[in-house]
Figure 1: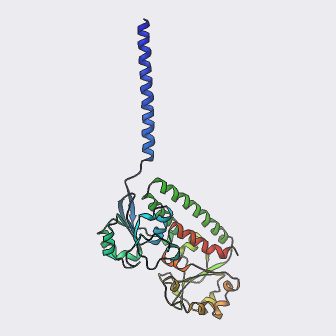
Figure 2: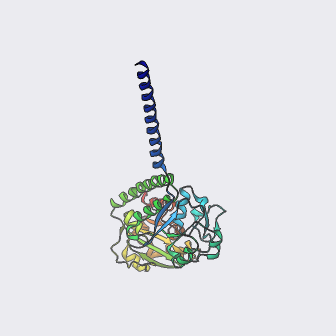
Length: 321
């Protein structure tokens, strides 16, 4: 009987040990599954879904906002090619290892092919070359919906982060939350104010005005600037505006972008515009509420983690006065 009890005791020990090991193994398996990284992600290329491999080591980028997002996430070393001739100032300090790949509107197809990229991120400016780029590597465009600007931008940021794994996704989410707090702070200030804004673009001595649903929708939709009552036709290049027209509208705030300065053109007429007598008679000038946007940032870039932060800082300078 004693031998039989001993045998049962020994058997029980083995069973308990086995159960414990199984539980431990199952726990480790569950934890491993939870942290397992994806080998592929599906990105939306306009109306088309594109499945690409994660952790691309060689990326060619034509979308400058995406480039600054990749840098902010810590993967700038994965960028091998970009249009380098007309970079905005905040992107001038990119690694010297990045090779030129043509201009922002005309890619150098041969140079891109020679880099043998894993992924090409095109832009709206290069859309007519899309088929040629697709022939080299998987190609995606992260489009921005002007009617839903911030939501589409934050969606793009999350998509870019998904290329680099869970840590990058967590960092992107943290940065998005910080940006949303800054956006809300500016929006709250504007919603409490009765000031009405007019957005103008200077271009080789000429001026054009933009409405709330234009390329500057971020200012009105997300940051909650109130547009003037003037009827402005929304178009890519804006509606031509005279000094008499600006004086008649008489905005409380003028938001000014100098396109000429952004593209390195002849900027000699800019001071003449700003010193015009009719311009100076507006409430915006009299009350020191002219927001001069960082031209190369707003015209050439935008839609990225860093560029969005800098865009918010641009308008805060005047709002704090």
